[in-house]
Length: 343
Ligand code: SAH
Image (cartoon, rainbow, N blue to C red; front, side, top):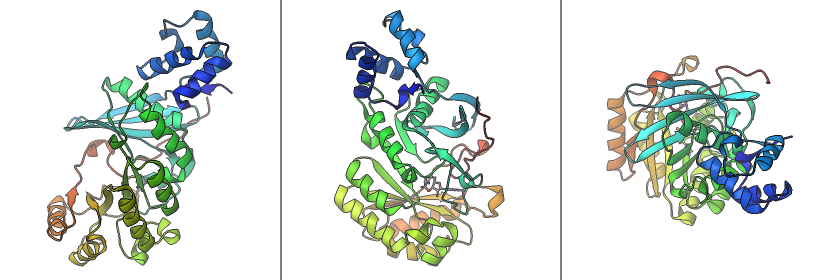
């Protein structure tokens, strides 16, 4: 099988060049070409022709194909449908005052089965490799003509259900000779797989962690998020507290506001009690519409009141800016729209 070069660290790329009978620095050159945006070996003009031919025989640059690109004219958000030989995933490019951010998918489909989210509706197809995640970043830069300087792993999939590949992707993003992204510009969001959260805190103490909370009673949370049956909310909050103590980093809780489900005054009082005193921030996300779920979002005015109520009680909270709504690119709206026939 050919090697996807997007899956390799710079050291591995040097060994790969050496295995093809070249000096290791040739591998470094290939690495730099790729991260400067080269999509094919023919563009790598300072490499010997024979080496380029060998590379083409043994390797490829696994950039996904842009199957669709939708732009939200209101805010410049772009949703990409990216195709790999056997699968397709969505990624969302967003503009913020502090720079450009890409919401990356970590799996094709999702196993978690959250009641409000579109990603689980089509079932689970497979994990993405680190190279395939990096491919989303490089392909989005190429298609938009803009540099991406923040990454959120909040697209389709549960990153902590694919931790080996996700952690390789994080290391690749940080590689100085490549994307050179600061750890602090990366956020990983989990539905709450506790043992992996602990590992992540040790492996990547500087990468930001977000946890999808949504409810604070076991029965309620289990109804919305089946993962709560394996990792109940009391243990989750305990693990979150431990994470903040060990890393000294603030943890983000995502809380999708669902009308009549978790947005009543007593729900918010409970949330306040559960989080008070923790080094955290609550990101309120009025639920985005997913037709099949029958659930409705809280209106933004009420969401603002909830943020104030939390803040007054000493729990910092903001309402997430809504981007890309007109293109179904908002949180929870990414899904498998169509499969792909193997090429
Ligand atoms: N599996 C990870 C990554 C997905 S992140 C996780 O669960 O955290 C996407 C965020 O959007 C999560 O907080 C998720 O709970 C939230 N979400 C899912 N469906 C949504 C919807 N319809 N409206 C708003 N947020 C939603």
